[in-house]
Length: 309
Ligand SMILES: Nc1ncnc2c1ncn2[C@@H]1O[C@H](COP(=O)(O)OP(=O)(O)O)[C@@H](O)[C@H]1O
Ligand SMILES: [Mg+2]
Image (cartoon, rainbow, N blue to C red; front, side, top):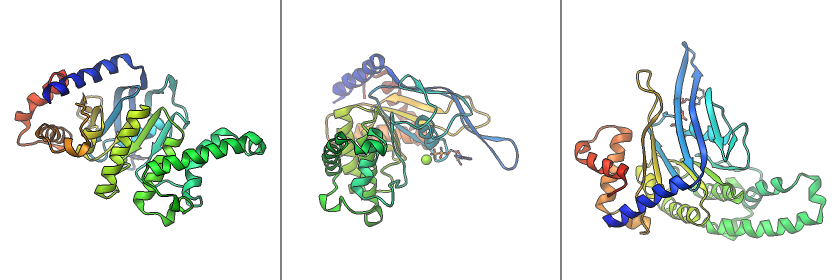
């Protein structure tokens, strides 16, 4: 087990070195004016390189800027200073390079499940005039088959395909939102606490699905979560952000390390004592001290060296 983890962590490192940088954040700062006086700094000179095909899990206390980070990469918000480059191009607007699954359900309320999932690719294919072309109908037929497969894969049923969002449970809406994001086959997938409102069994099944989809198509994933276990089980790399404090150094990254990989199912990995130790260590770093912090320090050093669990 220890040896396997050792080899796999090294593999991640080698992959990191050979894969191109997909998302590059350079000296990114974000601040907002505050009512009383001055500005509130959320991110301060954040530097981060994310390599193509990585699955980066992002943890951090509430308010430290995780959602802001995703909105910046998406192009929904812009930094006060610094630059963000995705796939070699400066981010200046929202485009189809990034698929985004926000925390709150985000479906079009007046479109059915199927229409929601087909909307993005249909629009990308052509405008209204293009719909008059015979090729559009062939494209649409194929798209529908693809959408059906994507929805079934997310554990949804054909009987619900024509239902509207208000007729679906929260878990179903979130499955549709993920299918919707995946339909565009984005090279970058941004997920903001996408599983946090789900019941534990739906959450576990979507975790497994997401992991399998990532293994098959290898998008670059930035996955924000509050759940330490989820971050450690899904990610190939963990980034823990800390809230900016006036008296602290620049950059919000308090932990950035590769995560050990295993071919064991998620449910089995969760049980191992190595996993429990890793979880406790990360929680201590992200959310405060632990009585076992000193004891767990060698584990941290080993993980950073990539030589053992
Ligand atoms: N548009 C905004 N105007 C003012 N403050 C904002 C705005 N958006 C976010 N913030 C503040 O930035 C901080 C970080 O927010 P956010 O990125 O949502 O944190 P997280 O997702 O880590 O909980 C919070 O303190 C939040 O109140
Ligand atoms: Mg958030």
